[in-house]
Figure 1 (cartoon, each protein chain N blue to C red):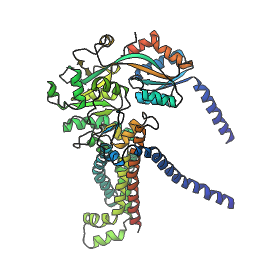
Figure 2 (figure 1 turned 180 degrees about the vertical axis):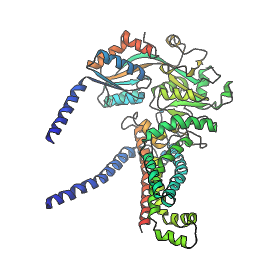
Figure 3 (figure 1 turned 120 degrees about the vertical axis):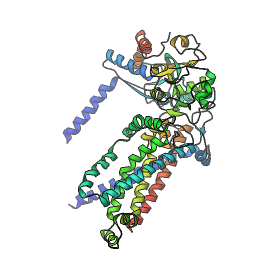
Figure 4 (figure 1 turned 45 degrees about the horizontal axis):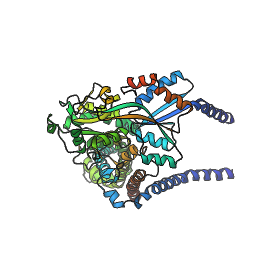
Length: 267
Length: 287
């Protein structure tokens, strides 16, 4: 019995050593693909450091950083003043690092004949003023608006840039991740949703907005209006392993990962 | 020997009392976090408010759509689960031969052991697209799909408890009924089922409690729209899925956080009442 106990004890101590060089991250499902791929490549280069990435949504990343639960909180929106205040109350000094640019694409099912809308029309769809594709010159088919849970940073940015103070229609489906939105739009003929550029694929159709094609070029020159930066938040300026990881993402190699995952590198 | 017995008695007593301790701890903590909400907002505005926009500024914290969402999917689940559960209990207890019963029961028990996330996955990937195509509705993530999955989940609960109740009905009662000239179906519906009604009803209430508290399935299959349902094909956001998907984001002590605990209080009261009701029926049966 004693033997087993002491073995267990030494195992736990040993485990403590193994994980000494840990980086933990949580938050935005938009930032997730970048963080995940960067973590894998970073661990290949630094076998003694282990990086764990969880999703949950920007709200989760920011609340985790405020409560000191992770080393890096990922977010696809900027931290709010209210949240900075909460962090200060917890003795946490939140530092922001932008790691990529991104646009939010408005996506519909491939079978949908519509391929462009105005920003105003998108707003009217998501606030519930338009209910049928017929009203937009398409087939007669009810519109299924797909939005995101309130913890989503993409939702917050969408709300600010597209809804401009309007409220999301009550019957919108609220899904938990970019991926869930993309796959539901792909299989629901009447659906419209919004996702970060990294989740565009040939299974959904990205709409031109105000006659502007969503792309790296139009985000960079400012003509595609639904764009934002992606952030990593830390407690204080990054140091140690966390600093090496963030430096890695900001390096040419890290920015190549940003591009590889479908997002837009910082210039 | 004496000390051993003494020790044993108190160790098991401690084990038994722990569940009371846990229950008290849970009640205390949800009320402690949730009650402060009601200094800012009326309990009736909270329960009957029609809009749930917890992160807007100012926030709308009305959970009526969430409560109706929970109730609709739960009633739907009972519509599916009660006929199938009670029906299988009648078959197993009254009609099946011992061999058939021994062969069937393990399958029902396996149904009870499947993790809810697997039910959810099945509902999301297989049932929802099928429902959308079959009924030509805009989305398959709705009350109807969630009810079917939840209904299947509660079959084993209703079936096994109802079967116990049916089998507890004394043989003399059945024989008397048959001797009076009633056939088997009449005996089942006019004699055995009424005699076992308390047990059957308490199994249904237990199924209700299980369905209304189920989180993963409704999170995955009910669509998540915080609206008052217009039809059985409307998407809804049951209370449990609102708590599960929003708790990670709500900062400790914020109004949103308190509101989620407020939902937990309402949910707790509903399940608490249903288990009181169940114990009342169970007690009636024992008399």
